[in-house]
Length: 296
Image (cartoon, rainbow, N blue to C red; front, side, top):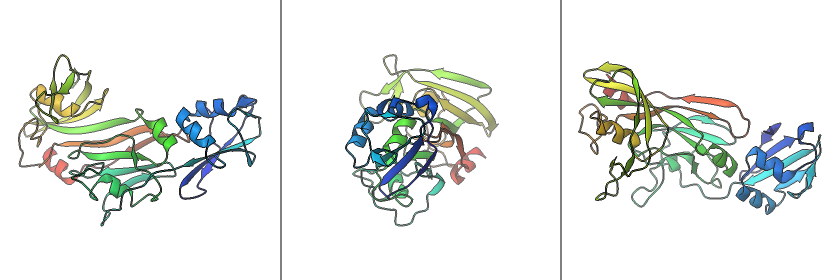
């Protein structure tokens, strides 16, 4: 994979990435070089129609042009879109930020995206505190409103497309009952016929695989570390409820709990390869206070 030699901002609404061409890419067409780097066909078309979207040695270049060892190839990605309004009081923690990525520690009870019932109080509004107004909000994945933890936001289309489906996440949950050791739950999930929200385990559902490891037992409950092989809606909650170990505080699939007023589920750690620098990155955050109370 070609590696950019450096990168920088030119304008607030552009992401400029510079490549120094080496011998291994000598005489390669620009379109092939960029596709190997991860530029999608759609983005490649946009670059062709952006003023100075693709240049070689400071001059306009076509995607069919060839590059030579020693050339400097530059692409300029327009971050089209509009960021929602900023939170009135921005208290959401940013745990990582660079030219391409923003990672926020989402508090519980906060939706990721704006909707008819949630305007101005979402993670998208929190992200606006840290990003340009001309940058679209692109969360690489989302968490349920009640679930807390890390959410990765791409600042441009290239980062978003290269990261999609390539984030490993460590979830932690507190379930009712005692579990020990580790295991895998492989049970299909689909929506209940009489509900637009609730899911369940059914033979005709979509494949859903959950890997779990018991971390500790306390007061008749179990702290679990969980990794998902698939990403079905409510997958963790449905799987453990189906087995008789619903998450604490999950009123949709279990019972109320005086220790926590939402499902005890937190995305604590994420692992990924940086979409531009190819650097392996691990980001971790602490448990929120209500989750700590549920654990204890």
